[in-house]
Length: 80
Image 1 (spheres, rainbow, N blue to C red):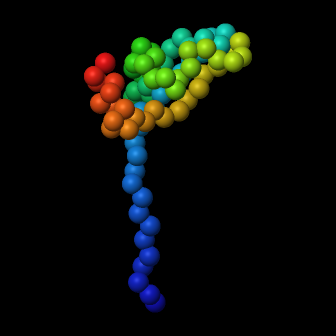
Image 2: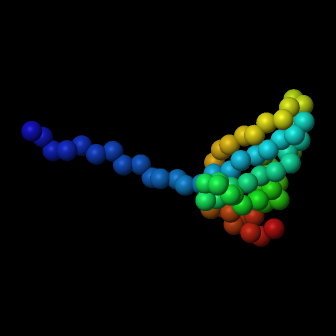
């Protein structure tokens, strides 16, 4: 029996968000909150260039994902 082998990776944690698009236009962003009621972060998410205001298709859809900012990006947003 040999020594145990471990793999260690840093955990990167972000903010779970839901983006709502109506007819291809971004209308609302919210957090998961307590699992039932989330926080409205629509205007905060508009500041992120990676989140499109208008989609390539005229569809109504909800997109869920994780928002992660590097420290330098966070500091830049705070300067604004």
